[in-house]
Length: 203
Image (cartoon, rainbow, N blue to C red; front, side, top):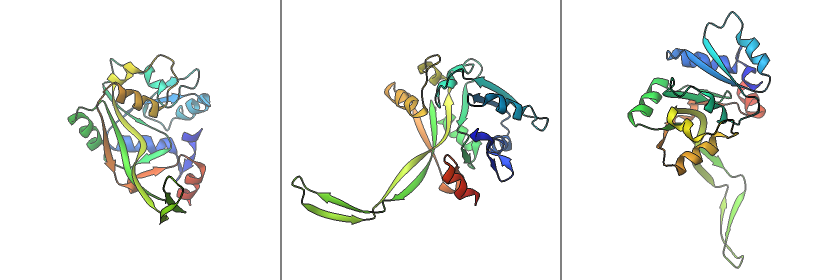
């Protein structure tokens, strides 16, 4: 499973848990589907002194569907993070920002600039060239896969519904939930979501 891929001497998920513990967050819930028994065996090791609970997906529920299984009465606000993202921002500042602004969801974002490696041609309706832009750049706010959520959002997820986080966000926007963004510097985010990115960072 991707969370167990070793990086700098530890699994990805160990790095993530340790960063939360650095800010005194000590309760973790891990959603399992693919190779769940291997994941549970890994965390049954004596070296893990952390309180960890598991959510078992009988079928894949996407990146947000398993949130419905959380105990809404016991959990008011909580973090959600993909296990292929390493975030170095101040987690206390993030939570404080979320609470002070009374957001239902806060998305951690970072500014990215991408270069299109070809000349971009602008033409009119007749197909005549108006202008050419050589290797244009575009800047956007990238979703890092790290969120703070209020348990109110769980009401819009159906039981055993397969739904990805982007679909959940679209649904929340349509239902007028209050969503904010928390910008971090690009250097505070390591995205290991693909094998190529993992190899680039590991070298």
